[in-house]
Amino acid sequence: MNNAAAQWTDTALQALIRDNEVHRAVYTDPDIFRLEMGRLFQSTWVFVGHDSQIPNPGDYFTTTVGAEPVVMLRRADGGISVLINRCSHKGVRLVSEGSGNFGKFIRCPYHAWTFGTDGALQNIPLRDGYDGTRFDSTEARLGLARAGAVEVYRGFVFCRLSAAGIGFQDYFGESLSTIDNMVDRAPAGRLEVAGGMLRYMHQCNWKMLAENQTDACHPMVAHESSAGTTVRIWGEQPEGTPKPMAVEQFAPFVGTYKFFDNMGIRIWSNGHGHTGVSDSIHAAYSAIPEYQAAMVAAHGEERAGRILGEVRHNTMYFPNIMVKGPIQTLRVFKPLAADRTLVESWTFRLVGAPDLLLERTCMYNRLINSPGSIVGHDDLEVYERAQQGLQSGQRDWVNLARLYRSGEGADAAEVVRGTSEAQMRNQFRAWLRFMTGSGEVAS
Amino acid sequence: MSGMTQRLIDFVLDEAQMLDDGRHAEWLDLFTDDARYWMPIAPGQTDPLLHNSLMYEDKLLLRIRIERLSGARTYSEQPRSRCHHLLQTPRIQSLDEARGEFQLRTAFHYVETRLDRQTLYAGWATHHLVAEGERLRIRLKRIDLVNGDAAFGNISLFM
Image 1 (cartoon, rainbow over the protein chains, first blue to last red):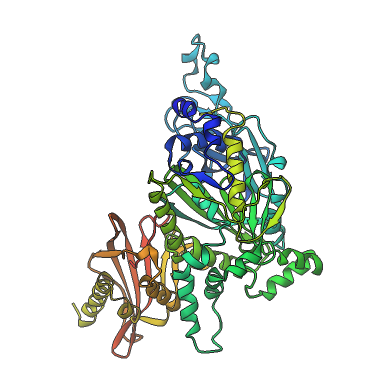
Image 2 (cartoon, rainbow over the protein chains, first blue to last red; image 1 turned 90 degrees about the vertical axis):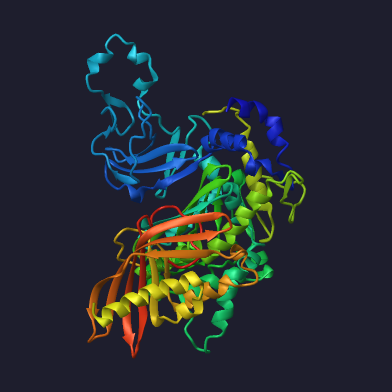
């Protein structure tokens, strides 16, 4: 790490990010990956989980934030903590199961040290063995490390690992409107994580996934094989055959350039942005009358219409999640190594909505985000080919120039054409800011 | 062993060979019009609709998947994937000749390979078969991987 920090000075990092292209090292260099874990994923607000996963005191959910193993838990006072999942004694990961309940305290499976749900060290067996050992001066006495800051926004739990840094509202700003819209789609005004999650291993850098979420020039090319085959076979069905939900979900992936261009992209500061400003691949799904009625009953005609009329496609929350309000999914791009990323695809139930909504969500997730998805196969193939191609030392730069305008990057929200690569450039401006800035390396 | 029992076992073995041979059109024709091919993610999963699955496909989706494999612009299948089934002798779970309904469970190891990558999967296949005239057909083929909740790369063919 020290070598990496010494080699990748702020000046060296700045030289990797140009206005309209980025150096291949940001995808391939293991030292840069370590710096991302030590800086970017420490100083930004990163998604942890959802409060519906831990309804009762002592409930926990384990995950990672960058390279840090963390546990999200419900305290006795009803609040939510994010603790580092490492015993302060020998470093043992305290819990290995994805979720469960601690009871009143967290007990290490190795030597039975116990910690409160606030992370404080409570008890050690044979405690008098530490008398006169200056134990109080050791790091272990501090108990479990904690996230620097935790925020629960409408059920979504985020943390910033660093103790000091940008505040939650300053970091996300108006981009939270996508989460608002997804939650507002529930007649009861809340979501529940439902249906398990799909996990899909990618042998490529996590940023390739982050960029692809707002890449509107790839669907009609990369997905010709899957969505294109669907449209062709569907076209052979006798006229009047009812259109299956699966065809409704696949077919828009081979929309025209004009369709995707007209969708538009909205860009916010700190690397956030979304496609689907005025139209999207989710805009033409069949209405579900029972659901519409529940929404009108909950919100009134006018507000229900406004909520359901928002058809945002992919919202990237920098650094590593994407949210789809109209279809209630969330994807996490978990960085494992410079060339390895675990993609988790989550599904949500709109509380108060008919089951058909969750059925539609699970179908979308299965058709698009599963290791068995033919759309997923199209994408993973090009990511992995890119990871391999970027090993070449004969060319160093990845191009991001589409619809670039000089002076880009003013902080105000702006809407650009759907086929612009402006959101990718926006992400790299944020990347550079959170990779340099403080210059502190926390791990 | 009764003639029907042997016929059911042979059906399952022949079906796996069709997949290993890449005879996908012939394989698809084994399925009834209302058939499903299901790969749950959770052990003992009972719900294919309100829970995530790796695959839950009707005949239309299976046909799309098969025709896609040989598409000129199906880059993820250039070069093509290949597969290998190693089956334990199928066990008959239910046999109702009067109704023409049969259920078999078959432990398997399945290897999928493309380029220099080879992936081993282990699990159990459950076949729900029905008699249609002289033919046996598949109404449901369910694949329970021993680790269906693990993170996989592409699963490109059929187990």
